[in-house]
Image (cartoon, rainbow, N blue to C red):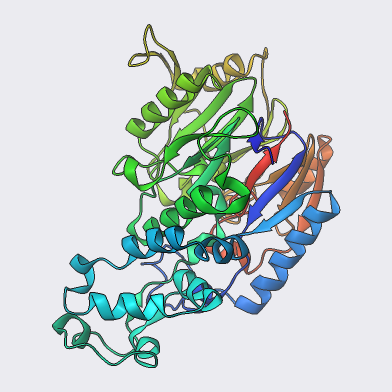
Length: 413
């Protein structure tokens, strides 16, 4: 199979999603903030909404791959299983006296059970149903319902941990500790799953580049919600609270060396929760056409181009008022069109919080959006964009829209 993403708005061919599962059932009012959620979800309804999201994608001819299926097929391979468990079961965290018992417990699980717990997390109580309690201070100190392995509810947002940029994938180190193990799962999937293994880091002949290799790039972090593929060799990156400038430089060097990208525009974003990722305030709905949150304003930006040698980069700074001109120049167009509905400040902030700007294009001028953002959706429709609405009353509580929940694997220019 050939994997590539050549734009944000070309026809979407294949995508990676993650259906809500056990990890979201672990969310409570007391642990939600630590797990980076603002609220708890009604999981059954969230699953129904996600099924609807999948159905809309399939109805437009998109091939949908589910993360849990890929993870199960990956951990059947001993090297992949070992890679994930070696990272997850660390004696510096669990203590040397309990590590072997915990590791042996995971090693004894069958594939579906192990995959479920790797994402859903496992408590001390659940582990003691499977092993004898080890003689360990660290283990004894845990309450019965404390997590031995915390859940990964943010796996729902497949966009962040890996993002495809032209003919390669960036496997991303996450900014927040609660998401670190997500990256390890994706490292294993891309390296060992049969769908990817033959092409891993073998550009040409159906293979692909690996722009970033995951955890080894930390502490420099970059997340896929901040990366927009403009097309024509250009990329737009938001330097948000999750994506760091040093990571942008590293990505630029990798992309330029691979010859797939010739220029990057990096936006200096406010370091605020409401501006968590670039795609929470700005996404593409068609070639050269964006939908934007009214409160985004103008941001300082930098155009990054190849330097005189592989270690150098050419950086051009732009004042805030030149933000969209810099994006247009990188994309090779005279100007970009920005669609922002007219709303009072309160309505605009509510729709931004509800992911009104976080839409997923399935082909030029056709997007999937949460139905609740009526003002934003109507504005897009009046400007010639076909909106495919999906329910998001529960999924939206996770602070991520259709783009956040999808990792395109193949998309046309």
